[in-house]
Image 1 (cartoon, rainbow, N blue to C red):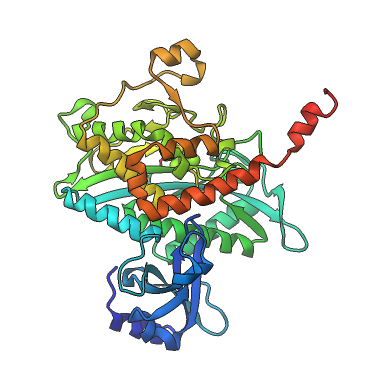
Image 2: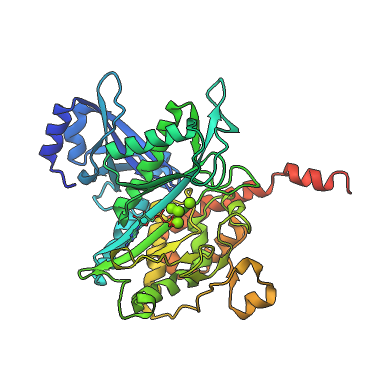
Length: 443
Ligand code: ADP
Ligand code: MG
Ligand code: MG
Ligand code: MG
Ligand code: MG
């Protein structure tokens, strides 16, 4: 929806909004807030609210710490769970430098930049439909999360209504109150695990939606005495949580991936875009799976992809082409997990795909067989490579990938690498219980 400043002023007054939350996202994908009382609304709408950028990871050094918040008026939304003092509204903001230029270390600014380039290349939209998964854990007496799941259900279970089902229904209701169009909501394969799918939107709105979604899930879960986590693999031995990304390019004649005369009713652009995703898959993993824990999900046996391959038939490969055609013609990237910064991963997916389109790259043949049953020789014969197995390896692949580096821009690329290398350096020094169990007595 498009709001004017005057409309926002009027709604704020009519609805008794008392606080404004100015939101943006840091390099790690974490939502940051600056909250101001409603009497600051004019200042907010005139792009005059300042904050200290040096307090945000990966933003700027102390010397240049003054930054401005420019609200995107289209993101105006009143939270349905008001406080006793009145309602709280939010605006998602862009970060600007003091000289009035967009700050290039802001992941949202970067996505806007990449989308502008896409429009200059003749497309109207990059549509994204995410499928985020999460676990619900019980809270203990002190309100701290435990590792106790709240149910024993599994995929599409009609188990007796439990804490998880009620909680998920409440989440869906709150999302709908906030204008989300929820397409599906179901229990996932693992106990305590859930998925909620909402309707696709253009890249920027979809990234904003993902951030809002995670916030709503966590807040509603708390009210049910539960902790919602988007950690990719909180428990070993059962499925982890992913966030499949469905994507399509649109031009003014509709879905650019659809061509009724094409092979499998797909356009040549769809195949080129697919080839771009596959060619950049290893470096892309660093951005799509940016935590140490992400790689505990990308292992065989738990429905997560491990190899670089695509299929229009089965559900196990990295990229699947769902059967739907027409407006719903899309590619589904199945590696992405919910710790990915949505602004960064969408920009990177778009640039990877467009690189395939620009250079007319033909994709390798589809793999419709079960890759997990192939031995080394068969994998080689079918040109199937694997995804990086650790954050460390993924970062090395990202470093080698000029297209993906450019999709982030210099500032974001450097702060991303710096923070992720620190994360890896800290992890590799820790001796785990698994190692003690294996070696302490054996050697
Ligand atoms: P799955 O079969 O993988 O479980 P879902 O039905 O759960 O898929 O989710 C499909 C997602 O794809 C939804 O978010 C939907 O809105 C989205 N989608 C549909 N058409 C398009 C499109 N043209 N471009 C991008 N996403 C789309
Ligand atoms: Mg789904
Ligand atoms: Mg599904
Ligand atoms: Mg799922
Ligand atoms: Mg899916």
